[in-house]
Image 1 (tube, rainbow, N blue to C red):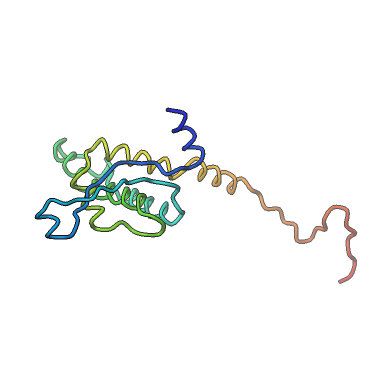
Image 2 (spheres, rainbow, N blue to C red):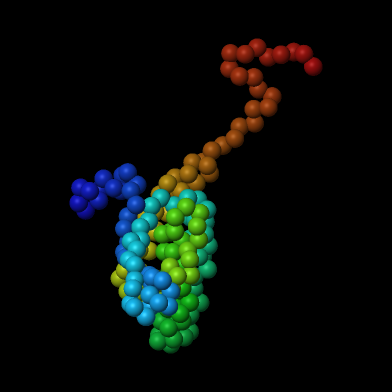
Length: 163
């Protein structure tokens, strides 16, 4: 990693994950071959988007669901069922604010990106989920013991004798 990459990681700067071409001016732009390029980047993810991404990951098919199939069928089924979810995850993460990914964005990702680009983007999305912090929060909340302090007075206070 370069010094800039390290600094950007600590300051939570948006990370560029690639570029997409979008058609300009509808049918006329298509006939003339006019496109605009748009840089996709991922920055910190709000909790709502983290939940949506987690739901997409949860819905993805795993290896246990294709047991007993021949290998080529396993690969084909996993690709068919999981690639749309991965593309949607990237779209959710790359959309600004509370926006959901547009159909054009999902279509462009599907048609223009290669598998290595997809893998790099998913890696960045996964990093931005910040699971280390999440598990730290879970460990903290699960380790707290609530004491029964209803009948106790704070240290240094006199016990009241009034009913």
